[in-house]
Length: 387
Ligand code: 9MR
Image (cartoon, rainbow, N blue to C red):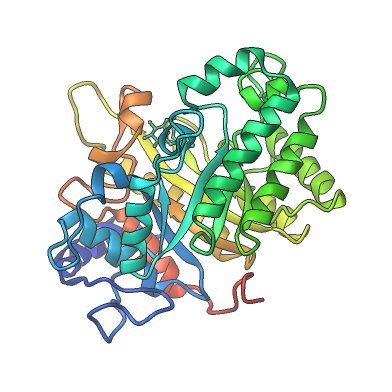
């Protein structure tokens, strides 16, 4: 819902007053400790069974968890969200630090937190060019395609198998296409991604098998392609659309397409996100916003944005959510962590920040309020998963 800045700020002030009353609630389950849905929680206001998620870093924030004495962060995470995505805990370097060594401690802590708070978990991620352990980077220099396939198959079967029945959506392949500005333009990352590189003669065969291995390890999980700059209809999403058609024609268990949703106020908003979701949905796929945040360029010396920037940020978050709400195949909407102090943005984009929906003292921002209202206004219906 588009609202004036004044009404957004007023509504946010009200939300700030009532939010401390939250308890852990679930969109589709009796909330632990509460018999009434919390009207100020994103998860309870979601229509159909749209999952409302946040990234969380188990190793940093969830390993220490006492459900009777949660930290403030854990209270908010449990109260507001019905889905968690491990921000780092299920990545290669975290779960597979050495050949034949798997370490699920922090990912298990995240899954345990989710279960205690009646939350679902999105798995992230199995095939990516980043955050691979040093042993993969080193070994991949001499891999044949068969060797790369064997390493990837073992990893996927082991990791997906470990979490079998506890993950509802897996980002099997993350950021596998280059951008328009990369050397060679939009094409599969057969240089940066060590697995695709080793199998550069036929990278799609490897990719398709990655989905097959994941499906065999957990037939219930919906398997996603996921990328950034993948919100609107553009050259990159055209490439994904063609890839998805090919995979489906080949009988691959591809189940969804995820647009990460990392936006910046330095750029305009591509309003074709809904049309983009609709074309993937027309293929029979689920769609999702998987990593939403909206970063703001901050003036040197300023830690906060202008009121106008705050309002535009709220509009952008809300526009992504509305695109999801308007497409029934949209199964989950996930923000990429909170509060601002936990955000990846300032490390990677110096001079930009304030990107999440909660301030560092957990005051909800106008973006939160806009999303809460849009969820309340949305038409109830059935989900793609329940058909
Ligand atoms: O938020 C994640 C950050 O903590 C890590 O340091 C970083 C490493 O690349 O990955 C971040 O998450 C990324 C996600 O896994 C894939 N899409 C882009 C996200 C932001 O970089």
